[in-house]
Image (cartoon, rainbow, N blue to C red):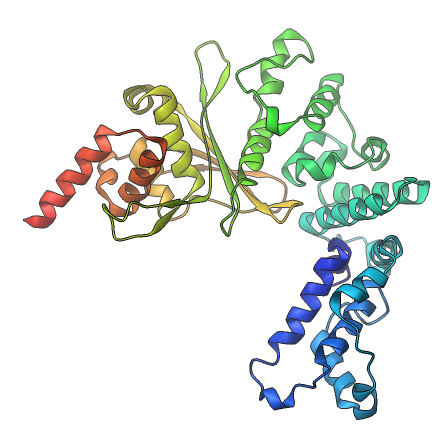
Length: 408
């Protein structure tokens, strides 16, 4: 509970507290709700934001105790959400909530009680604090170092063999907000000069300007392609694509292909988004295009249907990312619609993110172009191709055959 509070901004925390209290009235008679319930809820949110003892959870119970005291309930100051929020000293609130976690006695126990996601959340909290500290003083830097140490504790490889795995656990924009010294002082260790060059290259990436067909200008020539086209860069670009999505889960995907000269080429990119359908052709208003489907259509547009199906897709790998808020990652293996679609086009190797800061590799079962006739595959891919302004003859043929079989 303390970690969750330290992860949130004051505005997010207020919203969470008041929403939880508001939900408890749905199962009650509205007459039982005090007229000044919002003022009571705001006071509880203020206490939680200030990191007061015993205010990290059980907000409904606190509300019930508060409102049951008639004298207290009737005399509660009528203060609204915005006014209470503006009165808070944001820097002191973030500092207090982070210190409540960093000073907790359970952190000294030999067994690690924090998850990778918890540690990533605390990094977010330290960034919120640094944004409120114009002088960027040593206390704030010390907190950043402490939260990086907690992450290294949950991911020991960061301090030994694989420091760049931090980019699989914490989203890049958040890491770019930290002071560079926090990483080395927090326990990241670089086993070679090249690993440090790779780390600095990744940390300095501007994902909005990424050009994955170019060669990185860092490291020795034999290592440039590796830096530019590593699993980390694929995840970072897919994450950047995911941020474009405005529907529910934020997923991004890139399809990569190993070319004969050992270069890695990104052949298709996609993200989850809504596509408005043509009501003259279908009875649906819109369809949600998943990142995998969008990336497949993008590849067909870029390289042509025949080259994709005959040459590229059978040797390709797709990297899929799901964002957890703006600080961590979630598990995102292909869904029951995207799994057969990938097999239908021949993409059999999948890597996807997890909350634990690692990539999970999947080998899909036998490819089958016949799956294109499956409605769960054909309808989304048809919509994705329509959005791109292209046609896919294999898809059209499969849909026609399926329709003919249905008539019989």
